[in-house]
Amino acid sequence: MTRPRSSCKVYFCPKVRQFAPSGPGLKNVQAITLTAAEAESLRLRHIKNLQQIAAAKHMGISQSTFQRIFASASKKVSEALLTGKAITFLLPEGRLKKRVKKKYKNK
Image 1 (cartoon, rainbow, N blue to C red):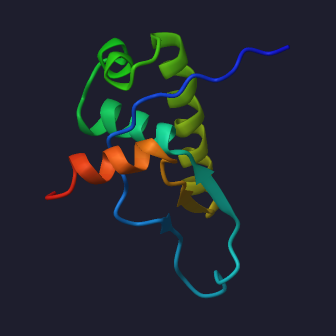
Image 2 (image 1 turned 30 degrees about the horizontal axis):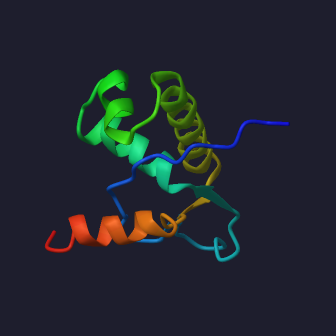
C-alpha cells in the first residue's frame, strides 16, 4: 500500500486559467496542466527568489518533495513553450481555495 499524499500550503491563485500560443492554424492546441502546487513552486523559486529549503518550508513540505514538484513544473512549462502547447492551471481545492481567497483578497 502506498503512503497517502500530504497536502501542501498554496497561497497563490493565478489570475488567468490558461496561456495558449497564438497565430494562424493554432485553434486546437494540446494543453499541459499545472497543479496549484507546481504553480506555487515556480512562483516561490523564480518570482520570490526563495531557495529550495525556504520555499519548501513556506509550502509546509520537505525539500525533496519541493524539488520533485518544482522539477515537474519546470519540465511541463519547458515542453509547452518549446512545442507550442497551452498551459492550463488547476485551482487549489477545498480549504486551500478559501485560504487563497482570504489571503489575496485585496491584491
